[in-house]
Amino acid sequence: MTFVNSDDDNADLLLLRSGDSGYEDELAGFQLGFTQRPAVVVAARSAADVVAAVRYAAAENLPVGVQATGHGLPGGSEGGVLVTTRRMDGITVDPAARTVRVQAGVRWGQVVAAAEPYGLAPLNGSAPSVGAVSYTLGGGLGILAREFGYAADHVRWLEVVTADGELRHVTPDSDPDLYWALLGAGQNFGIVTELEIGLVPVRTLYGGSVSFEGRVVDPAEALRAYEAWTRTVPDGLTSSFAAVPYPDLPALPPHLRGRYVVSIRVAYTGADGEELVAPLREIGPVLTDSLRVMPYAESHTIHSDPDFPHAYYGDSAVLRELDVERVGKLLRMTGPDAPRMCVVQVNHLGGALGRPAPNAVPYREGRFLVRLLTGGEREQARAVLDPAFALLADDTLGRSLNFAFGGGDRSAGLYDPETHKRLAGLKEQYDPANLLCRNYGFSAC
Image (cartoon, rainbow, N blue to C red; front, side, top):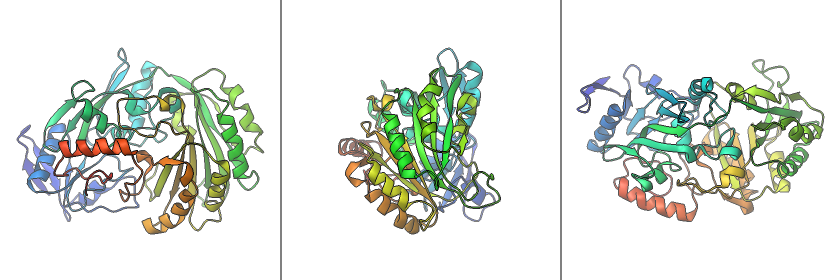
């Protein structure tokens, strides 16, 4: 354990090296499937600490990465400097302006709780434990995405430490190119210490899920019915289809134990939710039905994502259209008889997600996003997932950065050619030494 004096605020910067007390704990996060062994871990408590960490990395010629909650892990910190930001957890809600300022370590559940007393809601994702800043930098496909767009579309400003060790206040007017790149290209252009993002006036919503036993209701037929249903709903309704083969474990609720569960999840702020979802209940015998009007503070129950750390590997494909025959084959490949447990999710895109915005979030013309998640070593997981995604190749526009859970192992397809070219030019401008190495394909990591 080493303390280095930071010239920026005369505070002590906490550096942890392998073998130091607290090193392993500082690395721990939500993702248990990939190990990282940085030479130095900086436990940041302020923007000044992040400035000192980046300057230290530059002086030592070490790559630098950042970790908030650990849902996603940086690809460029191995043998370098890892900045952890979970202690930076300040939140400030401005109810009059309908905005919230969040520091780099804040989780979405905290923001939901802070905004709720004012009848406001953030454009958060499905899991309360996900980092708000890192999620937003990847685009941010949220619970109400078809009504309000990507979280990145609502960012007012960001404070970021760039590779030159400077803390910058970035707005679309002050630094339009850097603003554009940060929102969609993650932290390859700097370590964001704080941002301000818009809130939406939502106190309640109609949401939940309706599920079926996948051995009773054919998942491919349920998907066909779901795809047809999405063509009838208003732009403000956000939904997804999921297929999960649950293991027979005592820790699971009895109604899930050993079942292959096919679910359709819904989130909608309109008043006619019951009428709109009626066709879903006709798909087949219903296993569970939690669709209801709920406080926004309960929106995490729509997906009920696991809240405990675990190992996972996954990827995604943004599709022009959903070919139900091909995705039906994918469901059969990844169902209960697959060599590894796979979770399939199909998100309905469109609506406000298709609107242009001054950021690098790509593939806005996509109509659906297919996400696959599994466990095991990377090579074992890829042996299952790669053939499944190959089925979708003809309809695939690219991949979603938020749902590329591969530990930074692949960059192909994360951006369309025009966006990729612009990002490569800006990378050369803002980080020519590639200090902030994230391996998104526009720099040599």
